Image 1 (cartoon, rainbow, N blue to C red):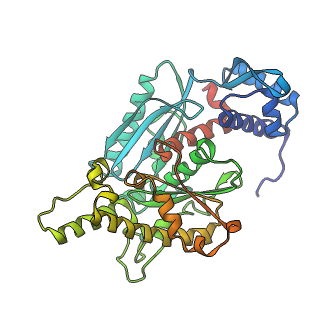
Image 2: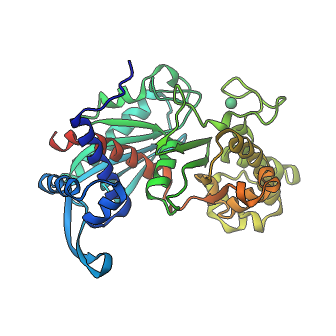
Length: 399
Ligand SMILES: [Zn+2]
């Protein structure tokens, strides 16, 4: 039976989680501000912060300007003693990094290319990289590991489907937990992205329904609604890469025909550009995504063939996003992942193409923006998934 009531201990722990989330969002703030944001009594805030300070989770940073000219003691999340590890698994590489409880990267992001995509090879590689990072961060206590994975990711079973052959029989979080002696939390990469954009991104906090659309080697959407990620019954909500935009299109790995990913992923776009170039000149060199994004000669504005194929991609994506608007009715759609490296203005181009926006007045408008992160939001989001776990399980500080 679903639990509906909450006892005193559960309420105390929910309040503690809430205050930690506000501390992360505000970066530095006063106890009065926390009381305002949370609606909790000042005395409750004082008790919670006293506990946090005695446990070393929160630190006082001297005086800051308060309301009505009063000075207040600034507090923030501890920055040096604790950390989490974020891992992003993509189709062709995985990234690993160390993050503070505020979600800031400490040191370098370590990227490992995937040369053998058999599950054991990749998962052993991730575990080795995480263990090396734990070892190197000897001064800090690592509390949890967050992993962002491509999808469809069936969160309840821990299964990634249709990305790498042979992976559908493996419970991915369980495999990693058997090698990493810390809590390992896994999330679909687009869900991790939307979490990072909502909690740390440069967007107004007023938006309640946010979609983060990751357009990279795959296409997927993370949906954040009323304070949480919307996953659906098995975890695959938002897999819009598998929306069909052509019933007569090629068969997709999911069994459907004409899926959006086959038309508009960065892999599909690269292939189309190469085909178009070779039609003109059969000896034309095959370009990789790195060639396309690393050389300004290949920017869409400098090459008419690339421009044409990029425009075609925008048309495909607009068709998918139009369906997404009618499915989830978001306030804000954030475009992220590899596609931004080719053209930062893509959010505006997409907004111009959306039939929904052409037809509806300002009142019903949905905002389309590019990601506000310099770094990949799914990578930051992976750390955010671990931080979210820590904020909900304070026992990890004493492990
Ligand atoms: Zn499909």
